[in-house]
Length: 218
Image 1: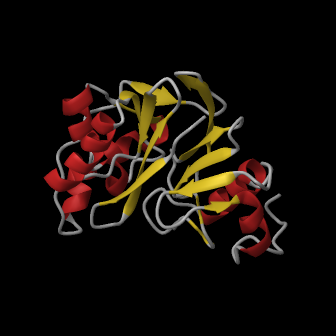
Image 2: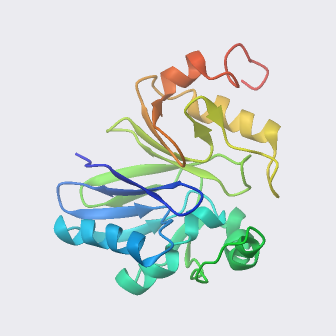
């Protein structure tokens, strides 16, 4: 059983997710904490709940989702695990963020990469990696089938989809990813998005204006 905690961090209002199960092991997904106050909010929650972080995962490499990676590495000794398609983004994150007038610590390099269909485990929990390029080349979703939970990063939003006007974005590829890999999941699958409120697969299939009535990508 997962006890989901979502923090909204940094200037881009990114969702950072902590997922522990009954063993108290947890994964940290998209660490976006970018100042001391945000870092303490995250680490205090982990300490107060006696959690043991065992993985740092990134759904993609855009700077707002990796701003806290350096802190997580210092605090817990975890290097990020992500898809190799976004390696260039994490390597150039500090240069890219400066173009937005922001600053961040240089994130540590990944030592392990995610692959489509890969099964990962922590505690008593397992989840599947779903490669969903389109928002970025290395975008992934993390699917907890038993719990009917999908961590969607910036692939799918409540009433919207990830933007495709950034380097590496591709609208047709994103739509194909969503139609063939996400809308095939059970409609009652809960979705935690990379920004904003959560949703369900069924709700988006029925009401998302980017998806309703569009069958060309199926």
